[in-house]
Structures are given as structure tokens and as C-alpha cells.
Image (cartoon, rainbow, N blue to C red; front, side, top):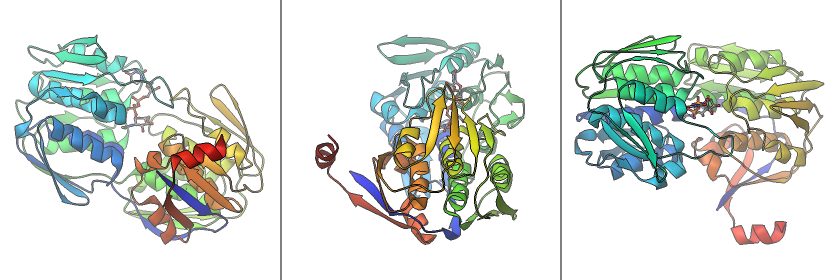
Length: 428
Ligand code: UD1
């Protein structure tokens, strides 16, 4: 297994290029199998979640060829199975996008039911409601969700909660349904818009993505395309907060500043200077951070995927802050790890109450999930002494070359192998 060893205390400085958005790329890979023709996706991040989904589509027969580290060619013509193996869904939840894609193309799909995960129960009732509205019969047996339809027909779908996953799944299923589909109360995240743009470049007719209503006119078939994934808003936000946490100055390059607005405005509120350029944003810490209140919300609100990073910054701010998590019910597990580094945070229900401390101290901690893992790395960058972060496989799910990029900004971080048994012995 691999871990990071960080010697903290250095203010990070420099320019860091941001790669393609993992969460957008997952949807685009599923969309690629809606057509028999070849689809080329550029700016694909080389992270484990993406590689698992590419394996999943290759297991059902799709041609997958990496043209380079960040470019893939997918050919859906050879897809010969509508059944996605449990192994994939257990490794990566977003494999359930293949439910929407296979249903859309073949009117039949079978994918293992995703379980809850470390951040919450994560039901999929809205996905099922949407598929049924399009005319599919959906059943759950032996842990498998089966969706089947004679014909998919457009319909009016209202989501009871704002959900990125269901919005994407229904767009995939409805792109080639007969007639018109209207999705009310959809998610407006940049990757929902990115999926609509890619599908439209394949011949779909989708309007309104990014607004309160998405309108889809079904088309009989989709065709080839070459498409470039948008920059990763959360990777960018993580580096922007790295500047705040370490008292440094970081420019995130190759970004769309508009997608970063909620992050930028919180950084300004806590006392950082933020300069926006056409395709870059510079964040400069201006001394001790200030306390604030934050609530996570669907886009354009402050993203839940940035919640651990802002909590880490506020752990070092002067005064008392609160962070309220309104998307997932169990997303504060990492707080216990931050506390081991000296943070003073009390969690009451879905709110973290933070009393800022002057500094953190290095400790051995474990990454409980992807974004919390990244936040612990930021904490380690700032902490006095050495921080060891175990279980970095979670971080590697969504951050490509994270340690390399941090070293480029002056961080003292190395990745090393360690023996799980040794760890148990030492801790136990
Ligand atoms: C996506 C992102 C994830 C991000 C999250 C919220 C991907 C691959 N993942 O996850 O990084 O943290 O959006 O921005 O893009 N819900 C229901 N019923 C449903 C579906 C969802 O009640 O059928 C609830 C969920 O439990 C959660 C909320 O709706 O409380 C939002 O979930 P959703 O937007 O669907 O998150 P994901 O798509 O899983």
C-alpha cells in the first residue's frame, strides 16, 4: 500500500495546471457507448475512478484505446452485454451511469445496486423514478437492478431532490427516447452541462442544461464525436485552498473561473486575495485567516466536495466558524483525524463548529475518503513536523499526480510503500 509522508510548514507558491474533471469524464465515458461510432475524449484525467469505468465498458465489449495518457478512443459498436459486473459498481458508484446508457441504447440494462458509502446512504430512488417515467420496468433482485423497456418515451420528470447522478442518468436514457423529455429541478453542476454539450455534439437535442429545466428532444441515433472534458472544479478548488491553508500564493491554470465562483467568494471572505484571469485564478493568503459560516449546497452553491478542504482552512482561522453539510449525512468522519493534528472541531448533527487554532501538528492519519483525504494532505502541508497519511488510494481516485503537483509548488511530500501488517501492529 502507499502513503504520503509530508514535512509541513512550507508556504506553497507557484502555478499548477488543472486536469480534466473526473466527475464530468465519468458521464462522458458512459455517453460514448450510446453510439456505435467512435468517440474520442480529450483531457481525460488519469485517475483510478476513470480507469475502472473504462475497464467496465471494456468488459461489456466496448473498444477502449488509450491514444495517450489523457486521450481515449471508445468504440461502442462491439458492446455485446447489458450486464455490468458487481466488481465495478463496488469500486466506483458512477458505474451506474451504464444503467442509463445501456437502457438508452439497448432498452435493457442490468447493473448491481450501489450500496451506501462512507459519506452516507445515497439512495437511487430518483434514478428509478426517472427510468420508469420513460417507460422502463425497473426491478431489484439479488442485489441487481434490472431496467427494461419495449420503447422509451419522453416524459415530464420532476426530481424531489437535486441530484447530479439521476440528472445524468436520465439524460443518458432520454437522449434517444421517442418524443420530448422535460427534467424539472435538475442538478446544474458544470459536468451536467458538459454531458449535454457532448451529447449535442453527437447529434442529441438537449437544451437548458445548467438551468432549472432541461428539455430533451429524442433523436433516433447518435454519432461520432471528439470532445474535451472541462477542467476539474474540485481539483482547482483544492489547490486554491492549499494557498489559504499554507499561507502561500498559488495560480491554478487551465480553469474556467466561472465554475469556481462559490469557492473564490469564500476565500475572499476568509481573508485571501483572489485574482481571476480568463483561464486562471491566483489565490494569495494575506495573513491569518478569518472565521466564517459555510453551508454546502448544489451548484452554484458551495460544493460538498470542497467541504473538508474549507473546514481544514477554518480550523486555522481566527475565531469560531461553522460548516453545515446539507448534501450528505455522514461527511464529517475526517474531523476525528484533523483533531489528532490539533484542530478543535465539534460536530453537532450536520454542522461542524470550529474554534480556530494557530497551528496544527503532524500526526499519523488515515484518509477516510477522496476529498477528506485531500484535506488531510492540506493540513499536513501546514502542520509543524511530519504527517503520515495512510490509505492514499482514496486520494488517487480523483487527483492525478497530486504529490508531484504539490512538490512543484514547493511542498515536501513523498509517496512511499508501506506494509499494512506493520501498521496494524504499530497501531494495535
Ligand atoms: C455527485 C458527485 C459527487 C458529489 C455529489 C454532490 C459524481 C460522480 N459524483 O454524486 O462527487 O459529492 O454529486 O455534488 O459526479 N439522492 C436521493 N435519491 C437519489 C439520488 C440522490 O435522495 O435517487 C440524494 C443523495 O443521497 C444526496 C443528494 O441527493 O443526499 C445528492 O446526491 P447526488 O447529487 O445524486 O450525488 P451523486 O451524483 O452521487
